[in-house]
Length: 120
Image (cartoon, rainbow, N blue to C red):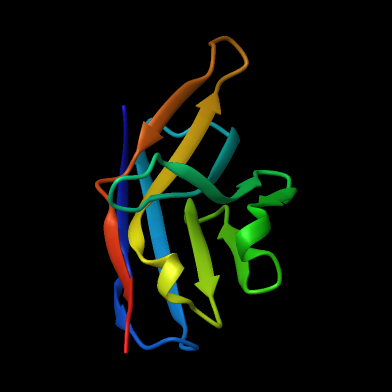
């Protein structure tokens, strides 16, 4: 099993910045992707940004140019730097990890979620 512990959510004014962190622990495998999804009230969960263990990234169109994602493989931690935040970025942000070993299939793990609210 893998545990994901998130931190960094909160209330910010439009145009402000926040940085989310997510640390993974437990049965960690090197072949993995980590990142963030979000879910706003009444909407489905959607991808925000992900980064592979090799450093390849993928972003939702709505956050390109405003959000950056990075990771520290030694610490099994992923970061989401969110700049120029908009009210429509308000959501619960979930840390995501997808991993496998050389001998197993993919497994997906989720964090408990952290609230991000963008409001004046």
